[in-house]
Every structure is written in C-alpha cells, then in structure tokens.
Image 1: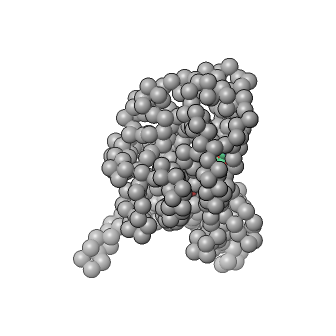
Image 2: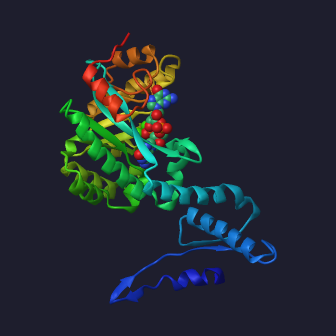
Image 3: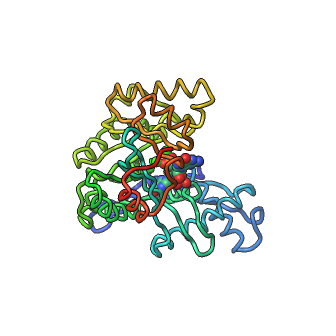
Length: 332
Ligand code: C2E
Ligand code: CA
Ligand code: CA
C-alpha cells in the first residue's frame, strides 16, 4: 500500500489556468546497492523498470529485476529511433493488389508500412508495430499513413475510378484516439472521396468494447469509408457481434488458406466462412494466396477477392499504376 503513495497523489487533478488536468504516472524503482553501485546504473535500471510499468498498463510501478534487461533497453532505443524516423521520412508504404476472382482485375489494394533505416536496413511491420503501440507512437504513425494514402490514392483513381486502398488500423488507435476526427483532419489537407478508402480492423480489437466500437464504426460509415474485418478466424469470433458490425468485407486469415488444399478441417472452415459472410452480406477476401490450387479452390467456393503472392507481392504505387494499365492478371 505504501508503495502506491506517489501514484495516489497523482489521482488528484492539477488546477492550471482554471482547468482541471489529470496525469497518470508510471514509476520504475531501482535499489542501492542491489541494482547498481553508481548513479548511472541505478537510473538506467529504474528507467527499464519504468518501461515495464508502462507495459503492464501504465499508472503503475515496478521494481527492477535482472531479467527485465535487454529486450526493453533495445525497445527504448527503437522507440526513440522510430520517433525520429517518422520525422525524417524513413517510413514508406507498399501496396498489395486485391483481385476479383471473376474478372482477374485489381479492385483494391492494401497499404503495408515499411521502415528503411540507414543503420538497420529494411524493417517489416511485425518488428515495430507492437513497439509503436506500446509507446503511443502508433497514433502519429497512423496519421502519417492516412495522409500518404489519401495523397497516393489519387494516382490510381485517375486510372480506375472505382479503385480503393485499405489501411490497417491498430487496436490502440480505436481505443485511445478519435479515429473519425483524425480522418476528418487529414481530409482537410488531402481532399478525396472517402469511398476510395477502406479501414482494416481486427475482430479481437472490436469485441473489447462492442457498443463504443459500433458507434465509432457507424461514424466512419457516415463518412462513406469502407470497413473490413482483418485476420478473420484468429480471434474470438463472436458471430453475435459480427452481424452488428457495419462492415463491407471480411478477410480470411492466411493460416486457413495455407491448409485449403491439404487439410480437411481448413477446407470446411474456409467454405463455411465464405457462406456465412455472404449470408451476412459481406464480401470475402482471402489473404496469403500463393498457388493456383488455392486460387481454384477459392474461386470454386465463391470467394470474391484474392490477395497474395500468387498474383503479386506488395509493390510501389507506381507498380500498381502499371498493373492497372495492363488491366488484367494472367492467371495461368
Ligand atoms: P496483415 O494485415 O495480415 O497483412 C498481410 C501480411 O501478409 C503482409 O505482411 C503481407 O506482405 C503478407 N503477405 C501477403 N501475401 C502473402 C502471401 O501470399 N504469403 C505470405 N507468406 N505472406 C503474404 P507485412 O507487410 O509484413 O505486414 C505484417 C502485419 O503488419 C500486417 O498483417 C498488419 O497487421 C501490420 N501492418 C502493416 N502495415 C501496417 C500499418 O500501416 N498500420 C498498422 N497498424 N499495422 C500494419
Ligand atoms: Ca491487413
Ligand atoms: Ca490480415
């Protein structure tokens, strides 16, 4: 109890120019001489412990332990580097085409973030998105991605006026920021019709606070934005909620697609997801399609849209423009 003394003090607001402001604290503690003999060492270890406090939900305190060390110091370094890199324009987006199975034409593409750093080289999002989420940096990062896509989508609409681009939205963004407001802000800079934008949300992030999330999704639909459920099948799918979500497309996770030509369970799961999604009025996108056999199975079972290395890896917007000009993919 006495350990939370400092945290308790911060429960009360500060009165600044007549306004009540609240802050929360995350505290790391290191002890002399147990955790170090010099001031530098003690501060470094207290800092590491503070990162653990933030990790476990903020507004918290943690005592330093030996095993906290390397991963978090590395993360701290990465976080600072990422913050700087966002300013220095080291991030860019690749786009992966999504193809209609009946026409073999690109209908949309998914924006995927990459980080090219002079020191580390090319870094893929699985390496840094979770650190960006932990540090809250995901919020300016999403804004950057929205600005970039809103500006680049214009290049593809010129060629095909029905094209749209999907953007991945992290759960942190839905929880801790006003996404519809951010979109309207970005729209002030890059004016486009929002029917050319789709947001990909994962099912696990949506079932956390369902009524609030449905409200946010309805606000987004009012702006004419398209919505998709990403990685479907990997979270705790709640069919009860799925029906309530105002979504346009459902993306079947690559894990199931991998097994559709060999594994009886995966075959049944994928067939069933497609039927269910259609009955609920959603289009179906299959992710991570790599072979003609997978493509044929999905086509036979009425999947609408295919995304995967079978057609194309994620590529630059210039390459997408070339694809669109060529018009159809050769599927043999
Ligand atoms: P995701 O949304 O499931 O994206 C699909 C991932 O599968 C991408 O990896 C893509 O390059 C890869 N992929 C596509 N087709 C194939 C295939 O046929 N075979 C295989 N093996 N892989 C394929 P990537 O680009 O490394 O992205 C990883 C994850 O990072 C994404 O998974 C998404 O969750 C996240 N992410 C990417 N960009 C962003 C972003 O701008 N914001 C946020 N919040 N998350 C992002
Ligand atoms: Ca995605
Ligand atoms: Ca996915």
